[in-house]
Amino acid sequence: DGGITQSPKYLFRKEGQNVTLSCEQNLNHDAMYWYRQDPGQGLRLIYYSQIVNDFQKGDIAEGYSVSREKKESFPLTVTSAQKNPTAFYLCASSVKSGPHGYTFGSGTRLTVV
Amino acid sequence: QQQVKQSPQSLIVQKGGIPIINCAYENTAFDYFPWYQQFPGKGPALLIAIRPDVSEKKEGRFTISFNKSAKQFSLHIMDSQPGDSATYFCAASKAAGNKLTFGGGTRVLVKP
Image: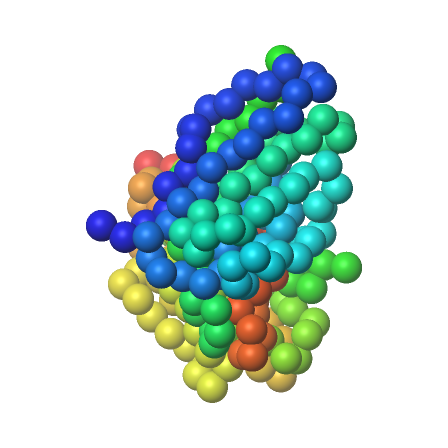
């Protein structure tokens, strides 16, 4: 079945550590996105990519980094510069052009310990 | 600047009631308006979407109403059930691109 796989489902990070969240899709979608969701809050865009080897900052990119070396993969690194990283992280993908909806992964819950 | 404003933030209805969620947008270039449903601990899932060339769209118990002149659209959940308890997000995107702008979300609780 086609879809988006995020791993791990739960992740714990010590202060000062970098961690990488995985996002893989087999939908042949060109565009991929990372969102952050805090409890009871909406979705805030971190980074997005519409083509391999290219990506753009979203609204809250500080303290995060991404890469897009393969169409299927869009990993997100939460760096030690992100002062408040505890949140639910959602990856999504979509076709590149035209008005279409996103397909979301099931999310990664990151907790700083 | 939030380009899609969603209200209310939370809503409680009895089973069989009709929760109504409203969204307003500012950018007249928006051409696609989806709604997403999210259960706790899960990713949002596309529920229903509308284009501005129609004023209403129904899928099962879910109905979108669209008012282009007012730049508003709303979601109605007919004959709501406890299983509809979730957070609902409206969103909008431009026709030429596909990056969605999301509203802030509405937490709906349907009491048995």
